[in-house]
Image: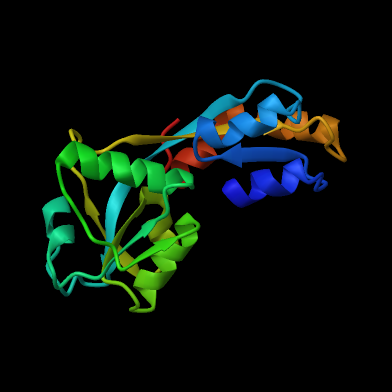
Length: 183
């Protein structure tokens, strides 16, 4: 989300933007880059991502603070990083990550190649990697909210509006639910 917003602010020819939080979308709104107000598209939950089979037996957020766990998190400047910090704060868990990444994909990727043992990712990320997930208790979890908006300088503004309309339709929402999002 963060990188895409920067590209749009630099006039990249993009029709539609979806960000993983409203805060990331705000610079585009402020710059007059969105043709319409952002609309809530879908929600997602966070999970603890672990290597296949969970070899370290990680079962809770508290386990992420263990000295034998190499933890990787998204950095605080990206939506996943903000959500991760909120989850850890709610749970009262103090961690020492070995690394911070600049996007959600990198967290899952580092775990899948064995460079890290665990991290916090979106629930929907699990299906794209050779990693497993450990559910978080509802009282500690947060709902990630994805926002969508067509862009004022879209090369195909009419098509962008129709695409947004489709995703917000019953058929589009059904597709999103099939990918693991809540709508």
